Image (cartoon, rainbow, N blue to C red):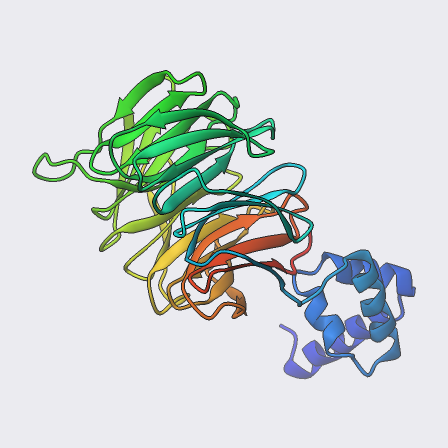
Length: 356
């Protein structure tokens, strides 16, 4: 077994060999590291590492500056991103705004109450919005109104299926409704809780393969539904209160966040995989998974956004660019930046800083 002195000598040899690599090779190594930008930011005294870190920055452009989208007057509760990079925001001021390159190009005021949800349909030419005025509206991406769906109850969440023709609406005390864009109500998924009463779905997501719908309820549970059979597949129990956010990892694991200040990881069969207790000090209202299938972002009433490892719970970075509740999160098409919506009436675009 190597002694402590031998281990230290081996480590020094490895360090020397690393620093003797050509600058471009060392730069490519740093490029792959999760926190390469932090390495570059500390301006290491070693010239070889410093030059390689600068090269890594050129390979992975990064800015800690937040780009601010200002124009709403109330909470920005919902965000959606089109494939061409246009951003749609929905707020409690009853307005929908469409943004391109940081500028508002269209404001829509057709809803008459708080907008709780917006979602872009795959294909990138249309989006849907849902409001406390008890309607859902289908729009072209340029802001033209195609159809209004009268649902008769408050709308809490919307998510789109990958086929670009169907979307799911979470309706107050009436479960989930699956609609076709032509106006057809395809199915109602009823969420029953203990005692037989119905629960309101506060959040919803669809698996990447389009086969399952996930809903987070106001009664602490998460439900997994089959799109094909329209039946309940599993129930995930463990949160202590309302489940405000659900999202899917690329491998179809479920992330959930709620009033109990935790983020939880589940399998589709209802198996509980992990609970992260240490991320936030208040309710978790927003979640988004990153494409690497290892990391995610969470937004909270504590006004922070956390970048963390889903597998071991390691906290990588805390973002503090909002001064009020973080209500919504979405990932931009480049996979390197995210946008957050807040109770401070601002949306902000920020690099998360991880390797692509």
